[in-house]
Length: 136
Image (cartoon, rainbow, N blue to C red; front, side, top):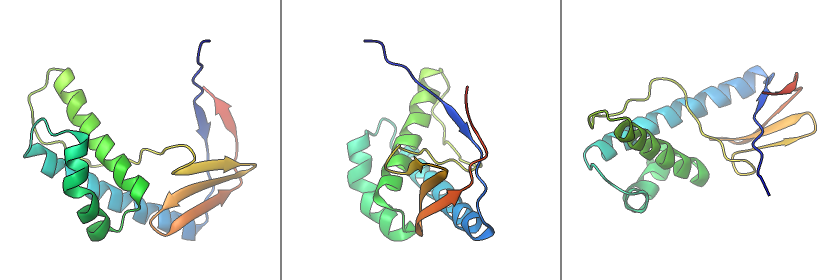
């Protein structure tokens, strides 16, 4: 059986309070991405399990990230370095300037009716009133 991938583009209308929570979460995640990137840069070829053992608890304690967010950050950083290597670029430190948060379905987010629930530093933030969901 063939598998199918569906990508949905969703527009959210968060309240100003929800927007503050999301911005804070994204800002901290960007800081953690750069923190982990600096650690990986000093250890070319580090594997996921080594990174997890070295930084899981320090990241959660220092930055207050939830478990799934921490795992996603590790995977995002390692993927950037792997992509750089596979594209033939010299090993150099990866910097994250923009907000980036890789979400995992039913762990970091879920959709129910007209509401989206997102995992944030403050717990689950629910944003209602989706404008539209269009398949690309």
